[in-house]
Image (tube, rainbow, N blue to C red; front, side):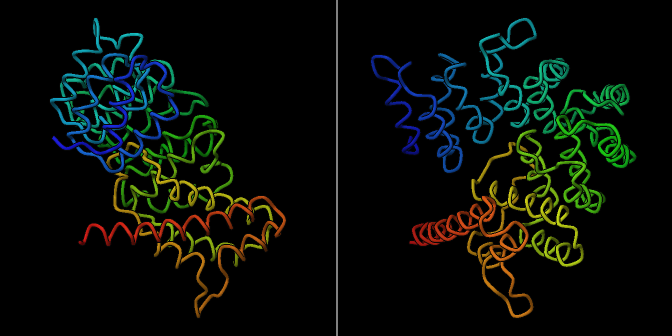
Length: 348
């Protein structure tokens, strides 16, 4: 069995005399590499390590969620559930993983955790998102109706709205987010809206640029779920940049311009970081880095204003966000070069 080098490095370090000395930061870095480039063999090899000390190896959870299978999901549950609940020392990411792996026998277990603490509820809802949930259709609708219109609620419950197969929930989620929901609790609403597919594109695009939603807020965590929503709906960054340019040209209000450009920069940061959302529907192949660099930073005949120039105009050249755009331009150049090198290596 050939393992990805980062997997072998994790196993080697943890095989030392004192595996507790392995820094969490280092293991999470190595696990991210396995997440991006590993395989089912890596998930299998790392599972015993995780089960030996689940809390210490929480960084491995995304690897299992992405590269595992239903047999691995069954083994995860068998080792981490006691009396119908996760053991206290087990990361709630197990709930997300077993659902994402399509392990239907976990459905009732995940539903029992939806009303748990925030992270537990989030992982349970994201896990259920990947399961059929036919038997929960009525219960999900009832739970949504119970919380509808509240400012605070189980934040990720709305991602399950499409499971009800009631298309009216699209507009109900939009109204909930616009009128009542706290911006500290709207990540699930944003993602839930996007999961309604094509009919949600117009509403999603509106909320993306609407400052009232703070859809790209990093402090609230909503930005990640907005980014996931753009992927679910196939709204690539070049397309969103074209929309942004049109909005900046059409609206002279400096506050509106700053909010819109700040939102786009946040989405670009997430793309450059190659973040993993854990949402299967969001795992479409994104635009290449060289295509993205060309769209954002290369002048064109019809519009010579680049993202760098827009940032200077809107924020001022001395503003930290203008500096951030310069950093992103450099990061995209480097990422494009690495992308080409990887293509060359694969083609040999």
